[in-house]
Amino acid sequence: MKFMEEKKGMTPLSVLDQPKVEFEEDKVLYTNRIQKFSDLGYTEITKENFLEISPAPWSVDFQFTAVCNQHCSFCSYEDRNKHLKKNSYGLVKRVHKDLIEMGTRGLIYTGGGEPLSWRDEGKTIKDIVLEQNYGIQTKPSLVTNGVMLNTLISPEIISKFHFISISVYGHNEEVFKDVVKVNTFKLQTKNFKNIMKLKKDYNLKYPEIQAKILITRENYKYLAEIYNFYKNEIKPDHISMRCVNNFEEGQDVELLPSQKEELKEIVKQKLDINEAYVEDFLNSLLPPPNLIPATNCWTIKLGHNLLISTLGEVYIEIPYGATKEYCIGNLNEKSIKEIWGSEKHLEVINMLNNRMTSLGCDLRMCRHHKYNKVMDDYLENKTLTPASSDFDLKHGYYL
Ligand SMILES: C[S@@+](CC[C@H](N)C(=O)[O-])C[C@H]1O[C@@H](n2cnc3c(N)ncnc32)[C@H](O)[C@@H]1O
Ligand code: SF4
Image (cartoon, rainbow, N blue to C red; front, side, top):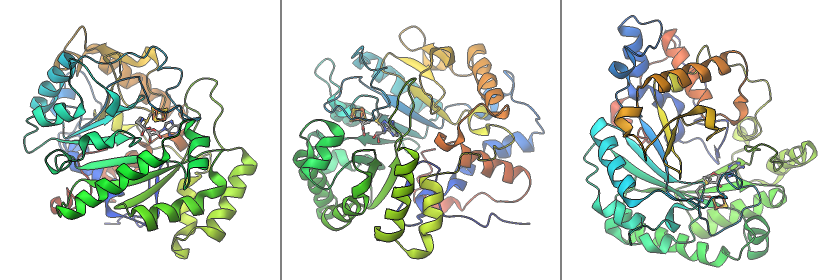
């Protein structure tokens, strides 16, 4: 049996400063879904067999509110969030109960919008986390700009999270502000230092805390300085980097071709990462345009990801997010149990899979692409499920 030679653990989106087990894409095999599909001899996913293989979305991106305390130049939700709507406390509570019962493993509290600015009936994310009985299967995680992180800084709350990703943009006030258009550098930095201190003081293994550097037209020239600042001053568990993309129609924020070339040189000459890793790093940071697609979008077909918008709409999580034609239901009208595996859900799965197989997806922006390749490899006997003892280490809750 031939095994995958490349296991650098990088998606085409975020790249770590060094290969890390946590990001190895073979963790998708923990869901056991492609194995089941193959063992049961299925050749297609149908309304009849979907729930047998995929009783719940494995990972859910839960967007709480469209409101945000920054105005990032590159925000992929700028347009979609103009309504400033939020999910109600009642909806959040109901959906948590259902998803935990169904067997969802990872709940990712995220946006568009800043999840920590959500408030309804006097409740905040802190209350949601404290009130939840996640059981042993399900873990929450958080993607935040960190400005209101102080509201969570206590060991009882923080230790419930498996993963916290803090989006960062600059090594000083000036560069930071140039990207986020408000003066949040000092506040975020203070919160970031405090959460790292708390983790150390209480000797907490989790949450794993990441600084995610968003590389934009405003800050790409300073990537090396930004990286050094977080590495040396903040010392998160790891640092990832990502170039912003154009997600919304008419959005124009991606680095220009000449800026991408300049960035490559900066990485080669100034970024303090292992030299032997630079080529792989660049291939993931600035993926080539013509990536070869997998045979199927297995990630979608096997119900791995779901997104709940700030309007209570349910989508299969894809880079092009909340395009209305792909909406599979609304949680203000139906429960997630009714929506999951419905006719509409299967119809959208097929639409999206057809789009991918007819080369309609920009795979450079797709976080499912590498998982799909792993599942193709599995079907061709080229790879095995990773050891179950590594589940926590590999962040098996999140895909
Ligand atoms: C939409 S935000 C929501 C959570 C929170 N407000 C934050 O910014 O961290 C989720 C992640 O997407 C990133 N993001 C937003 N717009 C993007 C874009 N155009 N390209 C790539 N990443 C983007 C954010 O920086 C953040 O890391
Ligand atoms: S902090 Fe997040 S949601 Fe807010 S503007 Fe920036 S990217 Fe968008």
